[in-house]
Image (cartoon, rainbow, N blue to C red):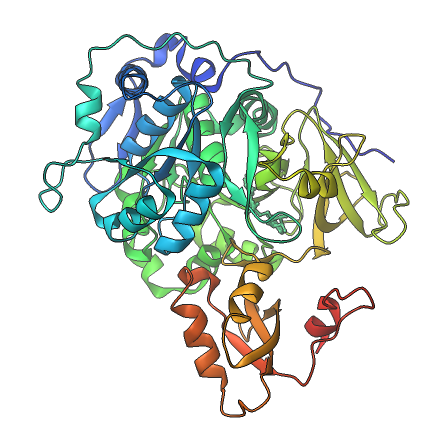
Length: 521
Ligand code: 4UV
């Protein structure tokens, strides 16, 4: 059975993302497109479009050509958007990197994607510089001039370029726009190949269900390096003529202060923020009356929690479901429908076909049955970069993307995510690929074997737990040592937070870790 959207299909223009957003500014030219939530500095749509052209021209001058990959390792700011769209306007491909990554993690993404230039900020040079050196990148450009890094090329230099905007022809259905990294259903993080059409399609597909999202002030605290912050917050905000108010990182007091000061009507979050909004006393100290809709995605949102937040803040709380490989949205709760169970992720977006299958037999399932969610549509990635095996394991011959999530459709077509059949762990909405941690643990001389799975901690939060088999003759290795070993080598969200020692890791006859068995312990 194929599940479809209650909305009719939408038309997807055959244009590049920068053309889609900036070719015809109409009456929005003089409206603020981006505001720095901290400093208050603003950029109008016309200023943004002009700056994007300058960056594209300067990148071409620096030798960046169509199809080249450019790394962006920066916290959210209006300049992030200028650089990101400048890269795309030049016909290049943006690979966006988590600012909390270690130098080695950054280098791995830069090298795997084949990046030729890296944008960063002075505060991240400590990891960016060794990473760029490891990946063989000589061209590192700072977003802002900084006294601590004098003499470095900056975006100001790029904006001063008088070169012509490069005349690149972008074929939206073929040419890549971005390469965010995701581990997908299995293994290490891989470059997710998203074309201009994928991103434009998802903006068009989410518009009918999110009519209220037009011309409002939108808070962008979710990081732009992740597809949710990048396409659903930044690009969707620009597409709807809204003002996108940026925050470089999450801090509860600053977050509440920005909502109050900038009177943002739409705020996008992941579930851990919902917990704070429901429980933290500080929330009462701020005037959050402008807030109309709190949109939550990236991990399961508890229905009761959603209700508590809605009641406390007096706003609508809605959920969506997405995945990097889906550009990223496939399901949203329509914003004109407040009478829906808050625990659901809403309905399929237009132009999308969904199926549920029994993961063991591949048999199609119907309403009320639990099955793996499959999606097909114009927002589905073209594949994983240089990885045909992983692509074939995720995208089937009929073009359906196998999400690795187990879902149920109700009679009204609303979907609830109930489980996962993939390895992926989500810590506070961020991806933790178990394969990466397992490979790292095996490099410890005291560890003979290891497996990492997601388990619920005492607060109900999913956390990475390592099952470890000690090397013979290493009886002294304890859990703290294992956690410290990992913590020194990975970004904070990937830390192992629980450790249990076993005599052997349970595995199938073919040597696959029996994760279900470990999770059930
Ligand atoms: O690849 P990724 O890190 O991507 C995301 C994207 C989430 C988005 C983006 C835009 C939206 O508007 C929105 O509502 C959500 O997180 O991780 C994908 C996996 O995260 C889990 C699920 O396991 C995906 O395969 N996940 C994402 N959203 C939900 C979720 C959800 N609402 N409920 C349960 N799990």
